[in-house]
Image 1 (tube, rainbow, N blue to C red):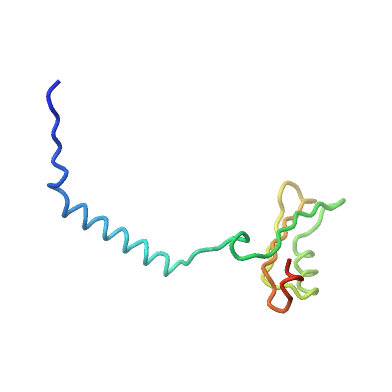
Image 2: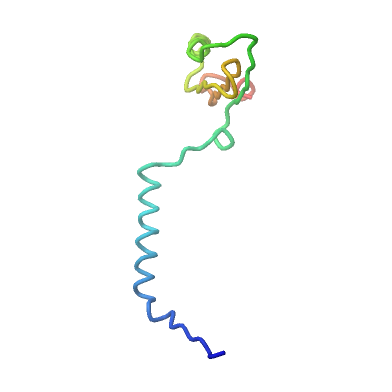
Length: 99
């Protein structure tokens, strides 16, 4: 079998420039789009609620609003009786109440 020699260093400037452009584009993308940190990093509460009868997520949202919770996300999962509620930490509550 003949000896195979690949001249990797021949393309070092082109590939180095391409790498620098990709790193710069990634950094710009992070600044522009920012990261969407989940509950694992931001804290908050995730509750899966199962109702006996079908429920409208808008009703749950209104009840959370009336209770003073802000920034919540309410969505179906599984069926129209199963609701997933995500509530970020509330600024007006103590750490113990947020837990």
